[in-house]
Length: 116
Image (cartoon, rainbow, N blue to C red; front, side):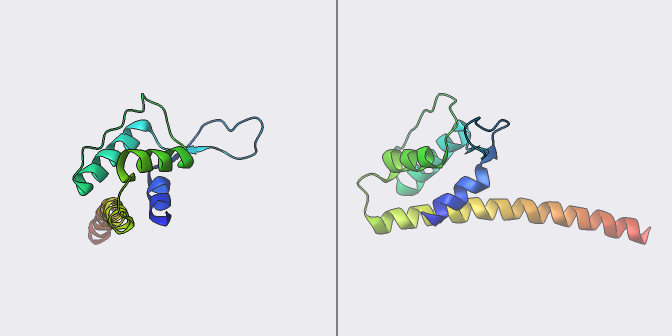
């Protein structure tokens, strides 16, 4: 569950307008990203997992329900854990690559500017 929460937070965006009844700002994941995650989990699990959200963003509860129903239903807990771990490692690795790439370019630009 923790790794799914981290994946959700990595991809999530805050809504522009909070609900009038609550003091919190809703956090959602775009439907296209949920669809891609379902497809990636399907590839990892070697199943034909599909999902069509029709452009509707998902909060964390809906995100969990979607992953469970479309990918993990009826699977062995160790298989589920392994698949989610692999997806988590893949997504976090991609984020770290982007951060390292951005930092290295920024550092190179600064060093070159410093030596000139």
